[in-house]
Length: 401
Image (tube, rainbow, N blue to C red; front, side):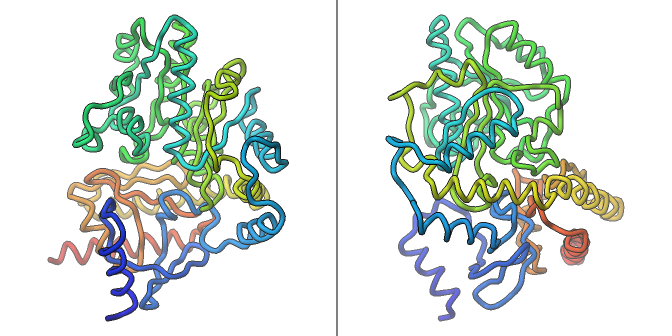
């Protein structure tokens, strides 16, 4: 039995089968590349599903981890620590609007904070509790997260859903306006849907939601777990769509610490003080270790001009993919915002993803027919060219069958 087979056997025997894993066992990575247990090299344009914003084995992260872990790892949130305060200040400065932050460990946890913020706000203003979300959205795998998610496939088998969520059509302001009722407290959406297939909100839709929330006294909340942290060529995904819109609360995770687990929520004044002492908590939220790594990652993104690189290299990548689409009719459409790129096919995408791996390229499926490229923010044009060449070869192989 090979080393890879031994590792797969461990999973078969001891790990719950909650993921439809590809038959790949990775043992190390560097930059935008990973190597499997047999020594094969792959260009990783999934980046841990939009997580590894600095690539694999970044010295920025290892240095921050080593330094902070030798100083102070965890104290609990019964006390103050400098890294958490500095990271909160940094995120508030990036938002550019007064507010405060809460820290947790994941996107699902960050969105749970948004649900509780909306519930607490609504209950203080007329006993409201309902949150409107949009169809094809994705907000995590917790019970409330799948209740908020506008995809029936994630709900099956977990009924009944948590009460208080209703789904409305994406980019249909009239439908959202009609859906607002006496119990509605907030509207939650992704400015660019990730799991939904890299589908963007229309600028006028976001602006209309802001007006609607102001008129009806609702919170406007953005899930930036996948489209945030510079991925779209702006620090915030919603800024790539409607830069003049300011939400009431935002959730982050994934790339916020470049692979180290952390989630965060920002809420603007006056809503930032709604969740007072004893109303919400996270044991491992905002540890000195997580916050020190996140600060180092954010500083590296700024220092190395990676948001500009996401914007410019992303545009180059999309251009090359669209040129390929003109020659490969199986590609229906290419959608891209910075380095959040979706390639929609006329056929099922999972066999394409599997064949891509044979050619040494990793991508992420979204739904049944969309391939996502969510590479590190420091990807080069040469690596984008390599990816297009591998995709072309893959499609050629499949067409020849």
